[in-house]
Length: 92
Ligand code: FES
Image (cartoon, rainbow, N blue to C red; front, side, top):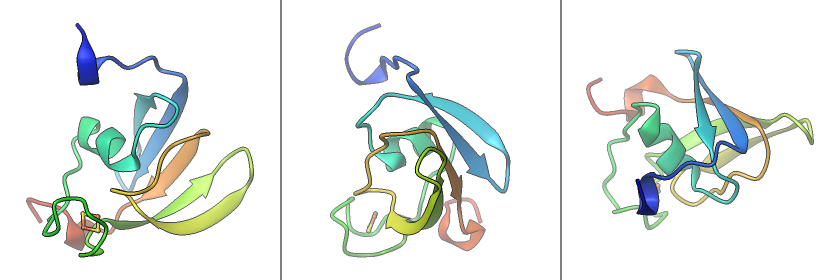
């Protein structure tokens, strides 16, 4: 496989509340990783960072930082845990 679907698996993302773990490439957007884990937001801004529907709580494991970020704008640079508000995802 080539292109966007290639995942080097450098990093791990744990997705809560489902406790799904996906492998991620360094620098890939959180949104892309969440989509690979089967999580899709009610995106109303085409990932421009304006609708705020993809706001999630993240815990950065190496730096032990907790933040609120927009999944469409945030890039992964370390192993991360994310808590997704279930009222903001498709299929809710
Ligand atoms: S998809 Fe709209 S802010 Fe992220």
